[in-house]
Length: 91
Image (cartoon, rainbow, N blue to C red; front, side):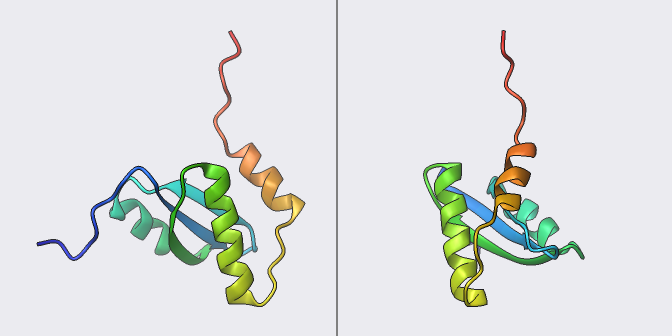
């Protein structure tokens, strides 16, 4: 029996980069999350449950707002998340 819970389509992981920016990604395997957690550039990684990427972003902001005593979601976070999204084919 595995010590990890079975993943489902609502699982995401989020992390705070050492520069303070927040990121969320689909949790496809525990290995992906652990590789990010081992990075020298990542402050903390958390598992989230959300139906959409926007919900996952809201959850990670709530989490760090509680953890850090008032982290505020900033425009830099929104711009960085938008830049990291794949471009849609406009054909």
